[in-house]
Length: 208
Image 1 (spheres, helix red, strand yellow):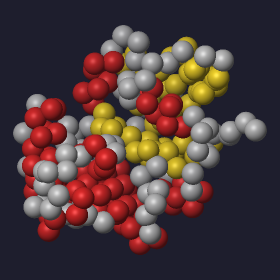
Image 2: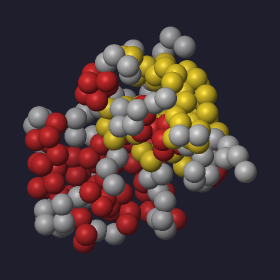
Image 3: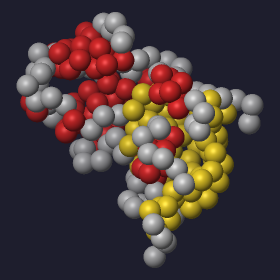
Image 4: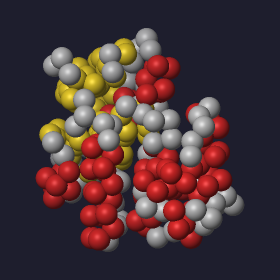
């Protein structure tokens, strides 16, 4: 596809004799919400981590925004945002301080309050992450993916464990991010979530 921002061809990831990702191929179009749907253990997260340059592949080809993963992984890192797990946040820092910390890692000047406004957390700016509800923690986690103004963000099961209202609030946020021009690729094992959010999906099947 001419407008594919991610292209995966025959992707394989083996751990010894165990084949975690089995010759997977798909394309993600620029500006869409693309879902990887399937049960836990089917290889969705491993596939994302390979595309994100976080985990080496065994074989196959991956291109992100035209960059070959084998040759230009450093360029790929500059244009993607990866959802951080809330367990990775420094417990002694408030949200403003955390954004300042992450901005420094990206070498970016970011208006922290404006970023919190995007995820409806301005009133929690001086709170530590441990003081947030589950939905608030997930919204802040997504905010961290936006610090480097990425072309693509990756969300790994972003609504797992949230109550129905918090899930819907997060869906609205993801739609807003896509509406602003960012491509979103996410994993989920919720069929209703894929139906509500995704323009297209790839379905992962777990062998018995």
